[in-house]
Image (cartoon, rainbow, N blue to C red; front, side, top):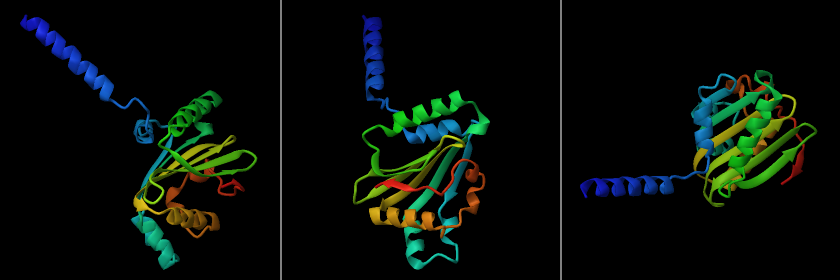
Amino acid sequence: MMTITKYIITITLGLLTLLSCDTSKSLQSYIVEKQDDNRFLKIDLPTSLLSEIDSLSKDQKQVLASIRKINVVAYPKKEGTEQDYESETTRLSLIFNQEKYQKLASFKSKSQKVSLMYLGSVTAIDEVIVYALDNQTGLAVFRLLGNDMKPSDVLKLSEMLESGNLDLSNLTGLQDVFYPNIEVKSI
């Protein structure tokens, strides 16, 4: 009788564990998984390094202050095969097609596509994701973690990047994966 009770309790606990797990893949788990993959360029950057740039205005520094950390994972196509690239884009598409990722904007040029997404509420954004694809050079995912960022802050950051007013020399190596010269297709 005791053995049957232990068996039932073990099965019940196992089922509860399986049912309580979130089976959807997260961007965080994808980034952690890629930390040991030498084909990927990985950068974790505290924004305090960027906010010390003298050429930034007070407003620009305030925008950067709303962001705690930037994670970047990039896959240069030269590091793998076309099949590897397609596999990674498929995996990321499955992640970003989840309902929790809200799309803010899309940019597109001949061979490049950039999607700007967020997690959180419209008035208090917790995470901004920039997903950039270039069919010739590779892909990059920029994950900006913040505390209740405002949509206006995200737009200001986008303008700073587009105008070149933000020194991204700390992100050496990304120029091989992602070109900043893209045209706005839809917002």
